[in-house]
Image 1 (tube, rainbow, N blue to C red):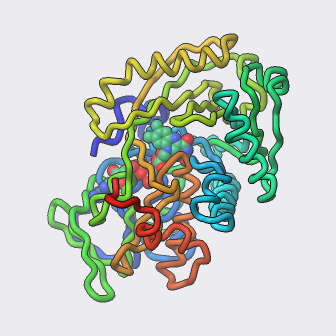
Image 2: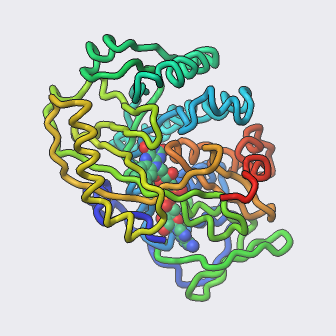
Length: 410
Ligand SMILES: Cc1cc2nc3c(=O)[nH]c(=O)nc-3n(C[C@H](O)[C@H](O)[C@H](O)COP(=O)(O)OP(=O)(O)OC[C@H]3O[C@@H](n4cnc5c(N)ncnc54)[C@H](O)[C@@H]3O)c2cc1C
């Protein structure tokens, strides 16, 4: 699958941060993680910390999949608002899903701390504004009530509060204290380098083309005919994980992002808050460690990479106009623009766990919370391979497929 257009920002900015060898001989491990994006890296890192023998296999180069295209806002807010998700899956489960993502932000902060540059992690508030006046009544008010009653630290901003504090115009907004952002490319490299120091064997340029469970053993084959044996396999192939499943669970879109040239500190809005809106697809923005602004959104319902990339010049203009309409006083010159595949599930939650073979596990962390869900996957799947019960496993398991699937599927 062609995951993104040329020139995603992080890859260009950071270059090749670390290299890993190619696997030349058949091997075995307690756990094989297939895919070395942010999900595979978080999982491999946690498995190593638990003292488990891990091999990581990556068909491209480390972090060159969707991770390099990610804008990496870290939010506990799932793409489906809490009040809406509560109606869909029940309040208790919805609040738990939000809480898991909230805890994941703090965990990413903790994990990043020992790395010299902390992978540019920063804890920040987020601002969720009403795209239209009627969204105040239809979304902002019920969402504020739902989050407040679930114990999240939120405040409600009126039109004049937003204008005074952030300098743009919207009917209302929810400000959340909990949020953050990170450089996902750096974080992925740091985690894998650290996992390697702790004993993980990491190989790139090896594509796994077949996975089979036979009794208590899982066999994997590479395109070049190497056989790898493991007690457990974790498929962390991002949006390409779908190929190993007999049923479609992913809805594919194209998403777009632009990043500005570095700006003067005085030009950035209050608190460097994450900013996003209520309409779908939503416009969102964040800042970077080198004082740039990333603006993303304008998603398009297409899985065709040629169409996705042909729309990029037009989407770039649209995103620039969106930004200038909101912040006319901030000079914005686009430095890079890129497009990426963006996968979603019907209920906004990831699929984490085994499908029909108990030693082949999946970490399909989709939607705008992909990275926080990857932290959850690292917990759930480390427990799974250790034979330990995890209280959150059911929330993200494949068992719910039958419940959320609409008649006829997608
Ligand atoms: C434009 C855009 C903006 C986004 N913004 C955000 C955001 O703000 N916040 C957020 O949390 N998430 C965001 N996401 C989603 C987030 O980027 C993804 O959830 C995340 O990158 C997925 O990471 P991953 O490791 O699962 O997948 P990937 O990074 O794609 O890694 C999977 C790896 O598996 C490898 N692989 C695949 N098949 C095989 C095989 N057969 N054998 C060996 N290796 C294989 C691939 O080469 C790849 O490197 C965004 C995504 C896009 C595209």
